[in-house]
Image (cartoon, rainbow, N blue to C red; front, side):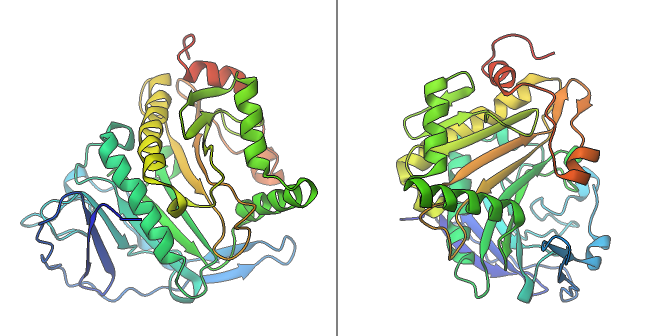
Length: 348
C-alpha cells in the first residue's frame, strides 16, 4: 500500500535513526543534530524466570533517563536556538526515532519513540482525524519494517498517557517495542486463538465481536469497518476494544478505507474517555497484532484502551490480587461502563 506520507530518514549525533513522516512533500529535513551526544550504551539483558518461564528485561542504564522536565525543556519539541532536542527540525508532523534510553537494543530488540505532533500542548484526542490517520500509517509502516529485522518476533505499538501510568514526558507521543520473543499476554492470546481455531475452524475474536454486536449493551461505536466496545470480561474500569470487522492479522493489512474509519473511531473513543471525569483520562493504548512468524491465521488485530480512573479522583490500582496473583478485579460492570461512554447518564 502507498504510504501516503513523505518519509525522510536521517541520523542523530550519536548515530540513532530519526525518521520524519511528512503529510505534504517538499520539507527540508537536512537540519543536523547540534548536540554532542555520547554513543548510546545499553546493558539490557533478557532473563527468564525459572518458576514461571516468563522473561524480564533488566535494563539498569535506564535509571538516568529524563523524568518530567519543565515544558520549555521538553526533548520532543522541535529544536530552537539554545534548545536542541531529539528532533533537529524547527517543525514536523510525525517523527520516529530510536529511544535514547532503550529497554531493548541490539540482540534484545529495539525501542522507538513515535512523536504525534510538534505541539507540546496537544494530546491524542485533540489531534485532527487527518493526523491520527497519518499516525496509523506510521504504526503500520514501522510494524512492517521492524518485523523484517533479524530476531524480532513481535512488534508492539502503544501509548502511555498520564503520570498515573508512569509517563515521563508530557509531549504527545507513543512507543514501539520490537521484541525478540512473544510477550506473555500476547502469547496467551495466541494460545487461546490457536486452540479455538483448531477446535472450531473459526476465529475467537470474530465470534466474540459478533456476539458483542448482537448483544449490543456493551457497544460504544459501530462503523462500517470497526466496532468499539467494552469487553464482557474487561479488566479495567473503562476498557475499550476497537476491533476490525474483517479478519486481519496486523496494522499493515488494513486497507485505506479501514484506516480512515479507524482514525475517526480512535479519536472518538479517546474523547469519550476524557469526557467522563474532570481532567484527561490516564490510559494505556495497546495494539495487539499477530506475531511476526506464528499465528498469522489465528490472530485478529485489536486496539485496546485500558483506562485507569474509575471515578473522579479515584484510580484503579493493581494491588494484591492483580499484581500478586494475576487475577483482576473490576469495580465497574462493563455494561455500565459502556453506557457511560455512550453518554447515557452522568459518570460521577
